[in-house]
Structures are given as structure tokens and as C-alpha cells.
Length: 78
Image (tube, rainbow, N blue to C red):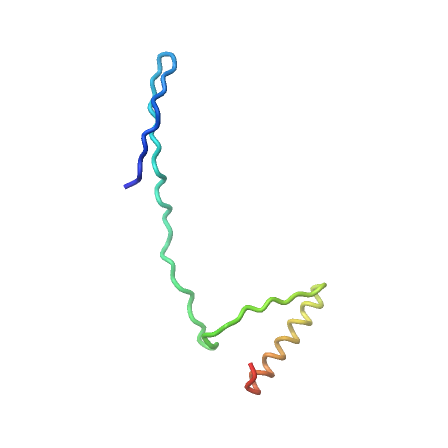
């Protein structure tokens, strides 16, 4: 049930009005479902922000980081 609040009565010439403020209806939102868990990846994940001056340098940095992650995982370090 929405909440309502009486406003004030306004008279102007031959018109008479009463203001009533009513709470807006709740927006319909679909139920929130957790994202599906990856099947091939560990449950623990980290977000890593990479930055570079140019797109080419960013791609190179991302490649280096990816190679380091693979190497570290193969040697038990990541």
C-alpha cells in the first residue's frame, strides 16, 4: 500500500483543489541471481588494472602479464 500525505487546500476564484502526495509505486525488478560460477577456473579471482600510454603498449603489457601468470601457475607461484 503506497503512503499518502495530505497537502493543502487551495482556493482560486471559483476553483477549489486539495493536494494529496502519494508514494510512487515500487519499480518492478527481476530477482537478482548470482552470476554462474566458472567451471574451469578457481573460485578465487582478482581484478587487475593495466595502464599504458598507448593501445600498443597496453597490449604488450597485457601480453607480458598473461605470460607471467601462465609461467607462475606452471611453477606453483600464482
